[in-house]
Amino acid sequence: MGETAGREHGIVTRSAEYIGSFPVDDSCLDDQIQQLHTQLKSFKSCKSKRTVSLRFSVKGVKVYDEDETTLLMAHAMCRVSLSTARPSDAQFAFVSHNPGNSDAQLYCHLFRARHARAAQFLNLLLCRCFQLYFLERHPEEAQDENSGKKPTRTPSLLNQGFPLSVSALVSFRRAPTQGLLPGAKVFSQSSTEQVSSPEEGPVSSPTIVRKKAIRTKELRSGAYRSFTFTPLKQRHLQDKLSARQEKEQASAKACTSRAPSLAETEEALAQAVWCWAGVSSDCSSSLLADDVLGAFLLCPHPKKPNRGSLIVRFPSGLVTRDIKNSKGKFRLEKGHVDFESLAALIEHYTEFNEELECSLSCSRVNHCYDWEEIVNKSSRSLQDSKKGTFNNQSWV
Image (cartoon, rainbow, N blue to C red):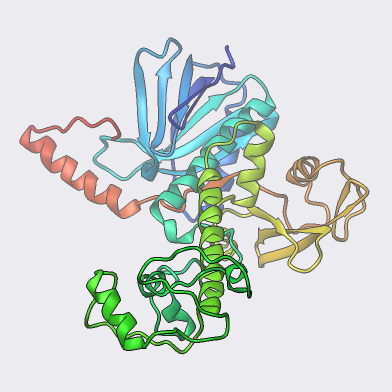
């Protein structure tokens, strides 16, 4: 079985062996996960039906034959409820509602990868697709990487308490300070720009200057402008506003260039899934409370820069444990084992719970799974089938 991967237009392709599917009982999430893993364990010795090619994207999951010429199944992301894996048996599975069914029965589709890391990678891919799909549906929950919120309107002098607009500032701009020293050569200015000292007001009457600005159509006749501040102070204030605006535009471009996407490497993908990359910390914490038992979130420590925080959903609720980083070694709070990397720490506590209430889980829930839409579509599909109509869609 090949382990080739292709990436185009946000699509990641991986190959695996398709074992089959089985119905999943409608029960609470924790019981469903426990029953699911019990069934997966019973299928570890089953032979595969065929080698398939899985295509992951934010839109959903498609399964093709080995030659990628025949589409075997397609599941829109809103129809996939959760993703899980058992790396010890190289198993990867996801639960979804089969398209075209008249009922709302959930099915688990089971695959076998070449080895444990390949199975974990398939699970991380689908988990990351869940997160990107959530960001697509809820852009307001995206992480704000700037120190402050972006202004809702372009900064102007009105925001500083001075009734001077940018257009009026251009009309009344004076020469730079260097040209105002005694004996310095003064270059010719336009009729609307006259030389004045840094601390003096305009040499002409405000009414005359205002009329000139109106005649040149640089200021509307109904506008009122104040001449309380000197041109040097006006220019200094405008420079500060311009610098702030340029900084905000640069930050916006940087955020756009770092837009969340499917990571290029396994390490980057795992880090993105564990940290809920791109999602605000408050939102990711609230979503974690509704995830599977043992689901976790990695985040920076709020007060200590050399430490991290591991937030885990335990039976008692969300619990935060510190991760100490000393000389390149990682250790969990109240733990006795040092690890070379965060990945090694997560892998260890996924297998053994030790001082934790329960072991960490690699399973994740799709928080945008639309149960009501599926039920409504199923009822409409049943009515259409009775009428003899069928709608063909690329994502069903």
